[in-house]
View 1 (cartoon, rainbow, N blue to C red):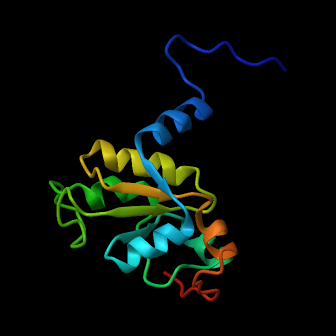
View 2: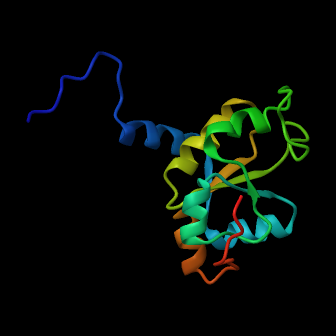
Length: 139
């Protein structure tokens, strides 16, 4: 089966990811932990089934990807109490550090300039020996 012809202006996911990562500051798991200790919010966007299977980071704010923008837009009626304004520092976490880059860039586009993501995601966090809950309560 041959690859479909790409429409004019369409970009591949690799191109979209590279563009997003060019607009955000990515952090290592260790740097994320240090920033969290200084008050940054770690936001875990993985679905419940993935958190149950892989584990969770203690203290992370769970906001599944499909509602992230509504929960963090300071002008949204659906924002979380933690969405205190445009200067809040948000560090997005997914499983391996791919979808978190796209999510962080989306928050950046909303005006949250201090948004980043964890390089390597939860997998890298756990491999770095940072705190992990292996038994995650059902949501």
